Image (cartoon, rainbow, N blue to C red; front, side, top):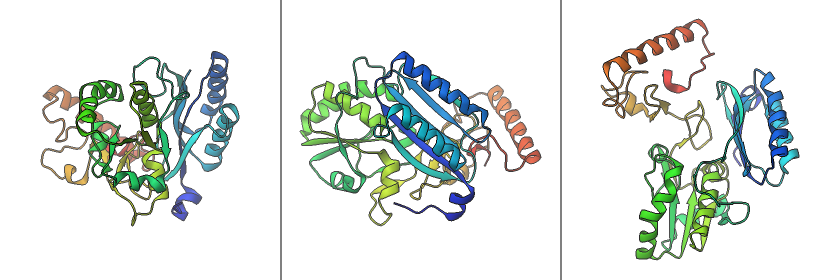
Length: 322
């Protein structure tokens, strides 16, 4: 396990990304929402937590003691052995606010009767994941969205080219099943950022009758935490759904920022292009908006810049202001 930068562990913000597939009745959901509502009183603890009958999914950021206290509260309600959790650090707050809400699914696939508490693929621990990546008889699939895959993935992984996880079932029907029939891999191994999407995806594949299904336990984040750079087969950075935008192999904020117009992650190289105008357009959205839109984006960016000048170090925006 990596040792984080001493200044961050002493003075920085601790981030916990977690999920748990477990059946929650209405009483349990209400108990959790009541518990979490008390945490919004802290100005330091922020994040996003989704609760559904199938479980809990969230990421929180704050002072280390507050983060650990909330994690312990969740473990008390959900069961310590069921909560999958990954920790990382940031020099600044990763979220603008704290919100906890009830949803139909904690990760939206849009398919009924998929129950990861009853049937999922076999876990592959991070230390063993390279064996699957280098095995010619294993088909490795990245279950994340296209813009996530674009900034980093495992070499050789199959990219479904989906914009949302909801599109994954259609891709399986239209592309994966014929692909498997043609290549006949001995096993299929899936991965995602923190483990939740690939876990639900393996449940779906098993429901479709596919066998020998595996998935990376703890996802990319756990792999980066436990596998050294020298042994790593990860290429690029890992997109995260908070204001850090991407993480490098040390699980520290990477080089990407968000285009404030379209929300796509853009690299240093992308930002050096003539087409890039900070807060207004990037190479991915230059043809998506009209002059009226760009005028509105320019005014918004002016307000962000003004806020940053008046309150340096307190920007509530992700790395879009770079």
